[in-house]
Image 1 (cartoon, one colour):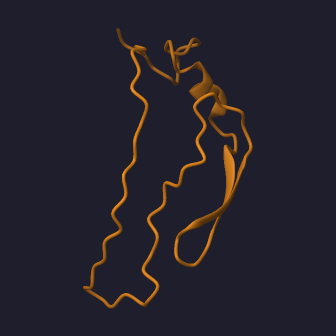
Image 2 (cartoon, one colour; image 1 turned 180 degrees about the horizontal axis):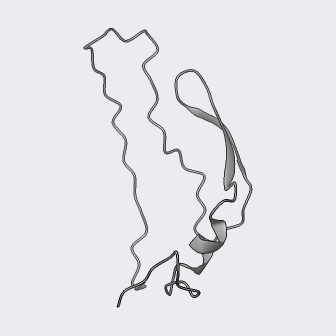
Image 3 (cartoon, one colour; image 1 turned 90 degrees about the vertical axis):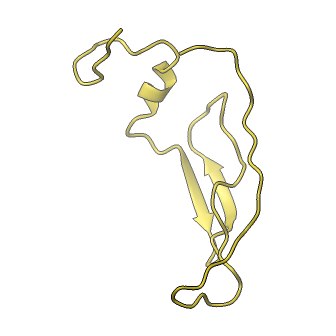
Length: 84
C-alpha cells in the first residue's frame, strides 16, 4: 500500500489524530537554563499525551569546548499490539 499525504484525502489508519494535530500547538513548555522542564501546559487533549520530560539537563557548571557530560536516564514506552 502506498500513501501520499499531499494528495490523498484520507489518512492512514491510526494516524487520524496525528493529521489533526499538524499546525497546532500541542504544548507550551518552559525550560530553565539547565534544560530542565519546569512547566508544561498541554494545549491539545490526546490519549497518549505524556508529562514526562524529553529534555536532557545541562550540568550545573559551565561546559568547556571539547568537554562532555552524561545524564543517565531511562525512558519506557508502553508496548502495543495495535498496527498502523
